[in-house]
Amino acid sequence: IDPVGRGYTDEQEQVYGLVFNFTPDRQDRAIAKGVEVLANYRQAEWRAKGEKLVGDKIDVTDLLYRVALEKPFS
Image (cartoon, rainbow, N blue to C red; front, side, top):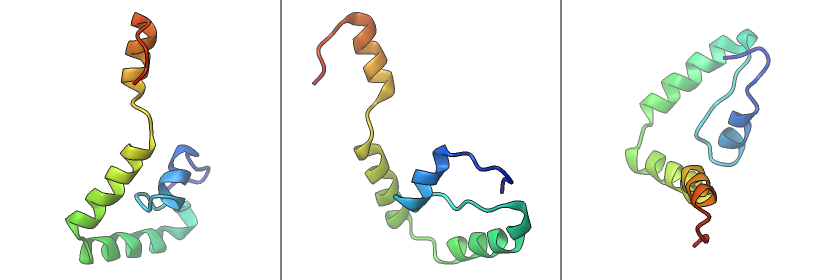
């Protein structure tokens, strides 16, 4: 719940369904969404969503390591 938003969570909400953004005037919706998520929680479903996000992104630590050591990218 945030009046301004975080920006970086927008994609996690819109593309991956991992985050649900609410403004303070929608606290009732935020609570209802939390209850819904917990009531319908399926570990495999959420794990798949997380794996998709990780699979779509680069490993920033690996990138910085390779840049620092001037190693080729795989």
